[in-house]
Image (cartoon, rainbow, N blue to C red; front, side, top):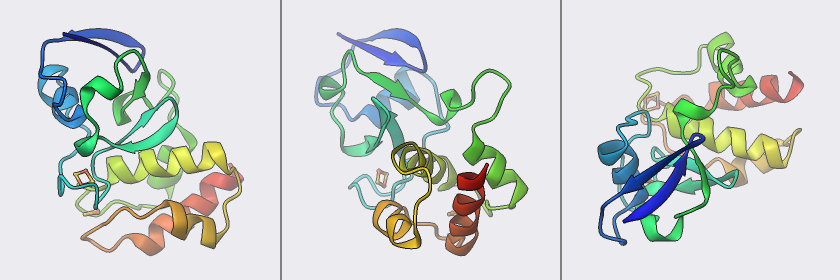
Length: 149
Ligand code: FES
Ligand code: FES
């Protein structure tokens, strides 16, 4: 049994300690905004925040995050107020199919909390998420837009 704090709520989950956080979030807790892409920490579709840092949840054992503050895409907004990254994404029409975008937004939100005005080099280093629809240019422009918000 592990106690997880997700989006401000505590959940007791009865899973093997080695279970990846991604599957606990999706299947035990029922938050399906966080996506499965590769399962090997390569694509970033599964990105969530643990204590504010971007983490690829497909390779994070649930035992490593018990008691830590976890935020998923469902918890990024403050009530009815969208996060500035979400607003920039809408204003800039970033998503295509959308599958990668929860993870992309979570990675960008973590970057901006650490570096509020990232350079293109900062973006290249931090945002290694894969988008099969090729939204990379839109993502970059929207990051710069969010950084000005
Ligand atoms: S599903 Fe986790 S990085 Fe691809
Ligand atoms: S928007 Fe389709 S994979 Fe990124």
